[in-house]
Image (cartoon, rainbow, N blue to C red; front, side, top):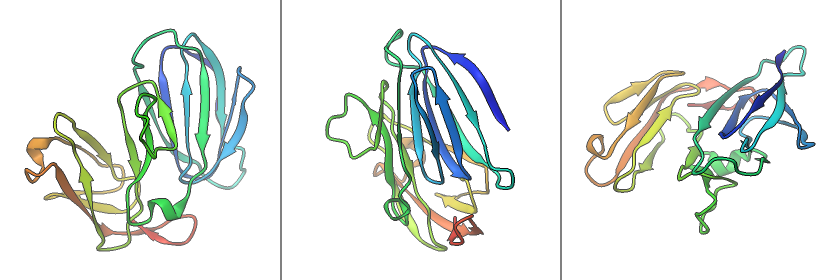
Length: 190
C-alpha cells in the first residue's frame, strides 16, 4: 500500500508521521522507515524520483504532507529526516521545521523557505501558547482528539488559520486540549 515511484521538482516536501510507519525510497539512494512523530523533508529541486509505502500488513499509516514552494527553483535535490521524540513534544511545542537561513534554530529539519512547523501532544486540559510574530500567521490542524484555539474548538482533522488579528493582541494564542483519544502508543493525546 502506498505510492509507487513518481517524480517531483522544485518543491519542499515535508511529511509528519501521525501513526504507523512510512517507508521512503528515492533516486538519491535514500531508503528509511520512520514512525510516529518523525518528520522527513525532501528538496525536490532539479528533480527527484521517490516512493512512499506502508509495509505493515496490519497497522494503519497516517501522515500529513505539506508541499511548499521553495525560495528559489532548481536547487540540488536533498533529503533528510528526524526521528520523533515524544518527550520533546509532550505538553509543549517541538520546533520541527525552519528555514536553512535560520542559524539559531532548534528545529530538527531545515528547508529552503521562510517557514516553521511545530508539533505538540497535550494531555487533557493542558494549555500551551502559540507564538505568532508580527507580520506572521499560522495554520493549525488537530491531528487527534480536540483542541480549543481561542474560542474555536477543532475536532480531529479540523484546521484553522491564526493571524495576529485573531490573537489576543499580544502575538500569542492559547491552545487547550478539550478531548483526547488513544494513540497507538497507548497514551491519551489531544
